Length: 267
Figure (spheres, rainbow, N blue to C red):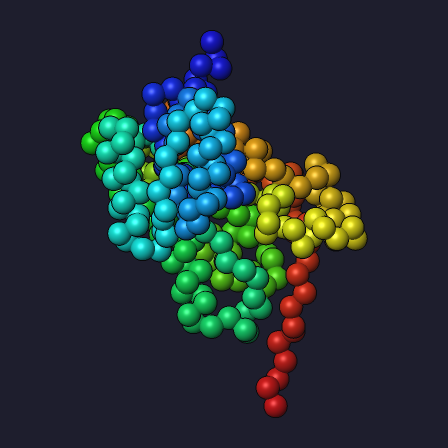
C-alpha cells in the first residue's frame, strides 16, 4: 500500500525547537506515523507536555532540554537519541527565528545571532546527525525548516531573511555531499498560526488583511507543516534530496507589510 511509504515505524527522529508551535506539531505528527521522537527545546515544561501528548496517544517520546546554540547541548541531544533507541534516522532542524528589526536599527551582534541561530546551528546539528544516521541506521533524512522571508522581500526582516536564505543554500549543498546515504531537504514556511503570528491573528483588521492576501484564505497550521515534514522524512520521498518545498498557502507576495522607516540623510 502506498500509505505504508509514509510510515516511520521503527525509526527514530530528533526534532529541535519542539516545545511549541511548528516543532511541536512536527514531533506529534512523526510520532503518529510510528517514529520514536526525541525532542529538544530550552523549556522543560513545554517538552514534558509534548511527551505526555505523544505517550497519551500511544506513541514514544523523550525530552532533552536543549539550546541549539550550545555545542554540548547539540551533542547531548543526538547522543541521547542513539543511546536510548540505538539509532537515528531523521533530524528536523526546526529551532530558529529572529524578530523583525529595521535594517538601520540592526546591530552587528543582532545580525550575527540571526545567522548563528538560523543557519550555523542547523549546520552543526546536521553534521552530528548525519554521521550518527550512517553509523547506526545506514541512511537517514534531514529536514530544515525555512521561511518565505528567505526568498520574498519583507520589510524589517533583513537579518532573519539572510539567515534563512543561507539555510536554503546549505540544504542544497549538504544534499549533494551527503547523497545517497542521507537526504537533505527543506520546507519554506509561510504564515502559520503560532505565537509568532498572534499579533496579526488577534486583530480583526490585520487578520482580514492577512487572509485576503493569502490565496488559500487562511493561515497555516503546525499540522500543515507536519504533513510536509512527514513526506520529506519518510520513504515516500526516497528519490528526493536537495529540494525546498513551499508550504505557504499559495503566497507569491507578502501577506502583511511591516512598515519600516525610510532611509534619510543624517544631517
